[in-house]
Amino acid sequence: MQETRVLVETRGTTGEETTSYWFDLPIDVAEFEEKLGVGAESQDYRITEKVLPFADEVGEDTTIEKLNDLYHTFESLPLDLQEDYGELTCYFTSLDELHQHRHDVIHYSWCKNMADVARYLLDNDPAFSAIEERLTRYFDYEAYGQYLDDNGNFIETDHGIYELS
Picture (cartoon, rainbow, N blue to C red):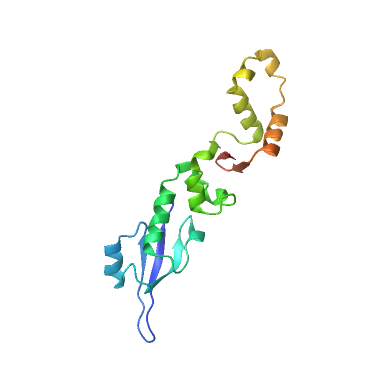
């Protein structure tokens, strides 16, 4: 599980001392208000540091409610998508978009290259499995894998290959 925490600092007026505290997500509103002395719905605080996989989604003025929503959205992603979140965000505009399309993403976790994906897809294709084994050994999985890569939307990661539908 990835670390998810933020440093929140109060916005003091001129001459007033600021208070800051690290909070693990999700943030308990009562604890937040007790430790910082400001309301979670006020604009009297700012996020100054963050250790989050979805850090690009969080700005200095992000509310605690929005921060908790982002955390719950991230946590509801399948574990493999959480693990490769950084690489997948290159293909999705936001965490919410990835979450909306999470069921459209196919993860071939055991595949290290496109030839492995080709082999898997053909092994599970009834038309191909009807061909005698003595003929299938002559099939060019690398070429078919290249064809899939050229005509599909695949992402290679350290944890396998993803297909975006």
